[in-house]
Amino acid sequence: MAATYLPYEPGQMLLLPEAIQDWLPEGHLAHFISDTVDTLDLSAFHARYDKDGPRNQPFHPAMMVKVLVYGYASGVFSSRKIARKLHEDVAFRVLAAGNFPAHRTIRDFRAIHLQELSELFVQVVRLAREMGLVKLGTIAVDGTKIKANASRHKAMSYGYMAKAESELKAQIDALLKRARQADESEKDEPELDIPAEIERREARLAAIAQARQRLEQRQREVELERGRDPDDKPRGGRYKREFGVPEDRAQDNFTDPDSRIMKRAGGGFDASYNAQTAVDDKAHIIVAAELTNCGSDAGELPVMLRAVQANLGQLPGQVLADTGYKSEAVFEALAASGCDLVVALGREGKRVLAFDPERSPRTAQMAAKLQTAAGRAAYRRRKWLAEPPNGWIKSVLGFRQFSLRGLHRVKAEWKLVCLALNLRRMAAMQSA
Image (tube, rainbow, N blue to C red; front, side):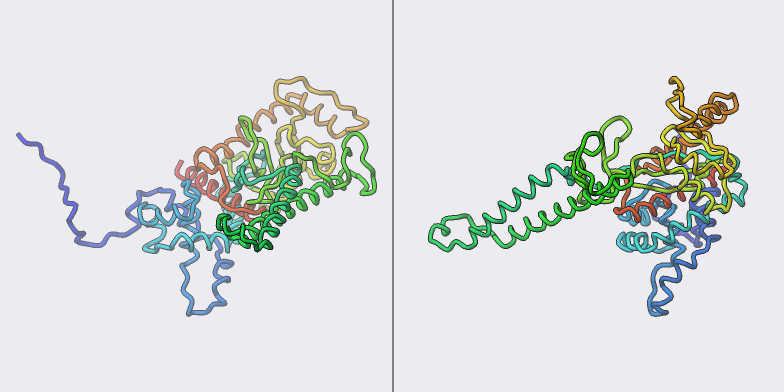
């Protein structure tokens, strides 16, 4: 007997219209993001369009925010890919509700509203606290290096800049000399657009000069912070060069000058940023997300605690951090904060170093705390609390490189990423 199948008629038209919301199952992340965005204050987005009057009809900010946030929450960061998903992906179509903004529109919306998107992160953190998912009993601070939107092949060391400048100047002089020659022998030379060649080399020369100035200014700031006087002559130790002269190996990137060369996990170096998170122990909600182009974490603990207080109006009871955050100056600055700091002073499993109570009293106190059973138990919680969100961002969301360039733009994009991850966590905790 021939098998029978359930009806399958690809050409059958719907007899009655369906609700677009029914295209996704109940509890889908897109529904949660849509409902959450509807509760947020988007007046700052609307304010940008009010001055254009009724003749201007941009896409609705709520729809754009929903599509952009869901894109980041589902691992789609490119404006071109988001625009394509609006046609191909059911969840995106539900959120857009029949709108199909072009990729340039999505890109421009993100670029124009960077500050407003950053402020949404704070609103979502406060919403998580209202839902009971943030308690601020214990938080863990951690940093992770994320690759900048910058090519490693478009960077140059300070030592090579001088060589490149001399070569370009010689090439420009040769082209100018050739342009001045008007003898018969030039007829046999291959055709060459000399003005364009000179312009190209001069532009390259100007870019190198700007990069040199950035490196030298950066070096002057570092040496002033270390206490060096500009009139100090070169000597041994840290001051082997003239004031403000970087090492030959110091690099600057032409595509994103704000990025810095940082060591990546597994070996090697990339133009990167140092992204920081403060994670609450209740539900792994990120309560503060900051970013710097300094590879060291040593001075970031006060920055993160100020961000937590700004976002939620109070400081946590306890703060956990790894050895990268240890600093006598930081311990002294946070001594009166009321937070119980538990910061490692060395690698786990290694011998604990002895600290002179006279020279480093706060560090010596921290060493003593880490020797107690309570101190060791508190620090053991750090790894499972601080590290999972960074792992989820890179492995679940797939966010391993910034789309934007420039420190202030990258800071905003980092908060957008953490906002998207928080919404995923809040949706998961709500359905649990």
